[in-house]
Length: 275
Image (cartoon, rainbow, N blue to C red; front, side, top):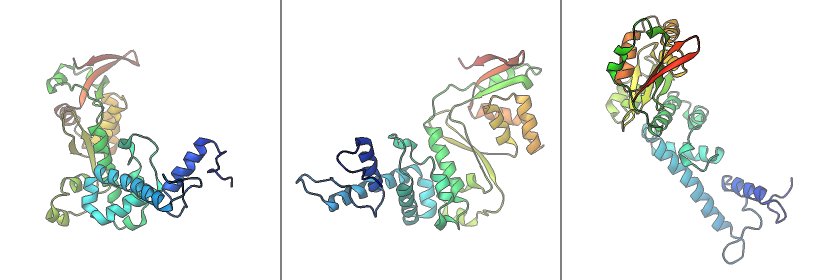
């Protein structure tokens, strides 16, 4: 294997070698790396390496406070350290760090006795994405009454950019909501069935809504630009009890509808967006 730390090696490769050594506790300091005195110093590099890993751990702690509370500080620190060493940042924007944390947690062997934890992490990441999503002006609930009934099945709803859906075979939404109530958490039956959750931020705060059966499929279809009529068909294929009227009213009341269009001539949309 070529020596990527040699002075004649291109700078990009030397930088890559430096980054690899930072996250590999067993790797020696890169050759040619010296301190202010001009001499190599493994101790200086070890301090720098530790600061980098600690910074990544602190980033995950700040991004996943509910997960940390559920598993405890020590377990979360070990989990975050393993993630930091195995999955370094791919972007200089630290807000992006943690996007793959849920998948890592799902494959982290010490977390195997906590099968619900991956979905809690997914929920927490969705909260962060919703919080930082673009702004948009919601339509008022009364706007729904302006759509003629014969046009309603052909109408498409433009949803707020913050809308996120998380589906779980566990009661992840309830688990999230009760994370500060130790007694209630003890009584929560994690095998009682799954929950679909919608997160959105039409105003200053992120709202979490546990959805009835079929609603997540309905909302996901609307988000993909499918008409209300076709979205209803998809949701009824999942659960025939889904109430479209109640679902539509709920979306408007939640402030997540920011525009309406009606299909014309097959694919053309006549947009009616918020003023």
